[in-house]
Image 1 (cartoon, rainbow, N blue to C red):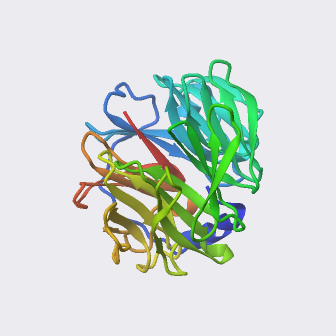
Image 2 (image 1 turned 90 degrees about the vertical axis):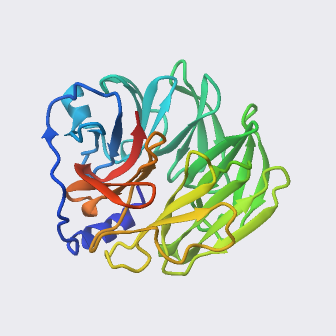
Length: 357
């Protein structure tokens, strides 16, 4: 989910989108009988319409089951389901515009508990068996959640608003702040919750962060619509030294930085909301490369753009979503790890994230 400004752009872009000829997949409105090897799809919905939900794709028979949360619980998941994660055998979903986090049973997506005390939750990351951290849009802090009680027990204040993705490495919490005045990553002692250092980066508005097989940290930053060009930066976590950094063109809008299971290859989506070919698709880059990829590894289909990205650790297949301007059901594309198209599925509105089972 981006700020409301992005939804104006997305709604306009949806009128430009044409239909994709999909491979038909059976669809069912009932709860699936087999959840063994499949794909849990989080559908964030359209901003302000309280229509987020969960879909499930059975990867063995290609059957898609939509609206699963509503089927099981009798009501919508909420307004803008931003993020889903598996912690201690429970799915936690951050529902940004509803100001809540819900805990769901992994067997049937039934509602276990709701956390109402965290404003605009964005991302949630586990630190220990009983502690997790939650970032918040429009707020200058990260919340500390005790998992045994699902309550907020502490607050880590940040200099800027819009805390985004986080990373825990060697008992240090790294916090991205998606603010156009922020040009650093905040390091925090994950045990005491006290800020320790600021790691300067080229560019502004960091939002995505991950760690590769060598332990080095990668940060994706930028906000095209507020005049902050994107950068991809590699950092030594021991010395805080920037090892290398790559600048994107002013027209680029890279999101969803992801790494493969062997942690040696980076992937990111470049979004072009108009659906034209320029800067529009999935890009792939080895961690030892010294230049950004010039061309997409997988070009977005004509008049579409990608929004969600996931890589199945079992099959190595790549899954990408087209949100259709957040006004109709999304399309999920399945590719081999070589980029060959395999299957096309229809899921809920605004499919943005995947969990593989």
